[in-house]
Image (cartoon, rainbow, N blue to C red; front, top):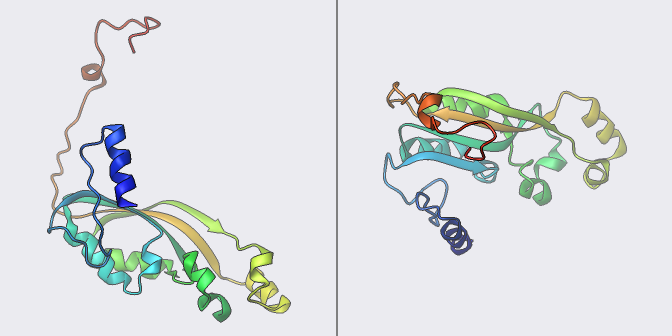
Length: 183
């Protein structure tokens, strides 16, 4: 996987990215190393989510940020779903409460914690019926439990509050007339 990522980055001319094999709760990089961390539904597969959030804080440079997509819950999953390997692999069984998830991020010391996207996930009946009786399915569907895909953004404190501002006129050439094909 890493070899393929490196090959693709080279093909596309990306020279400002790096790929390393490691564990998300013990990243093989120095403190204050990364500008940005991106993750897609990995935290739910890690038992100690607080450690991972702390590791992200350690690795980010001051002022750096992360964007993490993950699955969170509102309410309790039925036991049969919580302990199933298929649900775990699908990031559902490993999901924690949304408030707890965001709380870990805030307690770690991140700022500007924002949910950028939130979408309800509906588990199809043909999957639910593998784990729940008909009455359990009905109760689950009309209950207070929600499964959500969220994208969370947060920043590590300490960066410069002065971000460089670029005026649109600085990006455009004065020689470019509309319709001329130069832009």
